[in-house]
Image 1 (cartoon, helix red, strand yellow):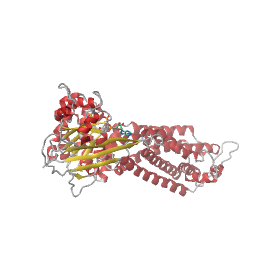
Image 2 (cartoon, rainbow, N blue to C red):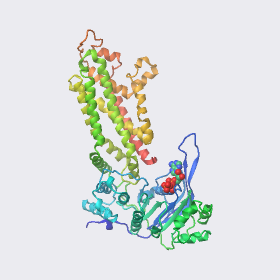
Image 3 (cartoon, rainbow, N blue to C red):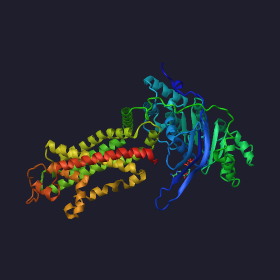
Image 4 (cartoon, rainbow, N blue to C red):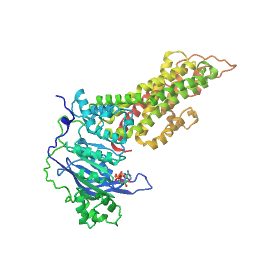
Length: 596
Ligand SMILES: Nc1ncnc2c1ncn2[C@@H]1O[C@H](COP(=O)(O)OP(=O)(O)OP(=O)(O)O)[C@@H](O)[C@H]1O
């Protein structure tokens, strides 16, 4: 029998309590040497959230709401102290991560996909149940209908309205039925009606046995009745936790009664903002920084639910590595055909470059009087393929990072699968672009029509491109967008400085000469020059009275291009393997430990 959305929803089999005690979260300054201060964001707060409840974390901007969600969801793991318990037993945030999804504040999406395509991708990589095609379709339809966006199933994500986009973002986190859903500001940028609808929807899904914990700046009065529990923060301290109904009693007990016409949460925020004098300490003391549970809704419950029960065949990622790579590549394919500009630009740049160099260096390939121009041509070809490959990666990966970070954190796919899909998808693009460019310029510059020489040159250009591609990923995995854009070009400078293009190594200090020998760029240029002038090339015709370098061997010697081709090949191969391996591990490191 087919399972539909309702069938796949969770049963509220008892409740649970997720509590935290003395939770402290500090941040060390990111400005080294100048600012050594440590900032305490969450100041030993306690609290208790219950299963199947809609909990709103409220507070003024900068009060620590997102930080609390980050700590509870396991998104942040360092510089945190205190305990988190589940039904009074200590648990790790890693366990919470396995049963939860995190909707982040600035959630980016692949805007060139339709709602259905991204839902399909999410179901294929994320869903733990084994569903057939029909069941997947039903599941997607069910979720879209529930969120009232089924009419938009074929709309591109970039064309969704703000409210639809928010609902869609919630929809994709629901496909694997997370038992706990953390949402950071799901109502930002929505008007009151859309915000209330969104909260109403969240309330509805708690009834299916889900636990929703979300942050909101200042809820409007009409949505307060929907909250089962409110947790209020101010400047890293808890100033209230309990039901919205009990807020009024709370105010009376601290001697600050709320005017009857006021929204109680607005009043709470005004007190927190010291609009009536400095009373924050009163609130913190009364609520014991979150330990006082007296203002909770009175509901006697048995905390018996075990949401952490793992199936015996539990895996960190529900899809296999090959399936993850396959679906990621399919998504890359869809985004590339929709947004052709990047691939088209790469192709156009290579074709243009092929014709441009072919025109400028026309006929330099078989003329002794222009042998130095031929050297320059090969140098420029290697430099160009290195740059185009390098740039196309150090711009795209940092821009995509927030999406990949969120999806990886929510257990959609591993960093290995992501990296593999990126490389496998890009390899043929590099191959086609470089081949077109080299073929055009090779023919136009009158190089020897020998297939071996052509293939060796192409080989050196390709391996240079792949090394450059990995270098770009190494750089962008280490640095954030701004720094990688800033240092991207400078990062390659040392490779140019230690090359015979800048200075003959024989004119430098003997120690520096070793660096020339280990420089992949220098070696790639040597390899390219040898591919057309080496391998016992016969003397070149001279169309002037005197040509100094009619013998290519003499030229290679003078320009320090004599080289052991196997050494060059293995050196480039070593660079390729080291850079790709480093990029592979650094992407994993960045996805795990870095947030920007
Ligand atoms: N990486 C960081 N470095 C320095 N300070 C930080 C960092 N992350 C957060 N903070 C500070 O911690 C405090 C709490 O931030 P947080 O994002 O949790 O607040 P918030 O209540 O969610 O705010 P908003 O509602 O505006 O998103 C803020 O003062 C913020 O400047």
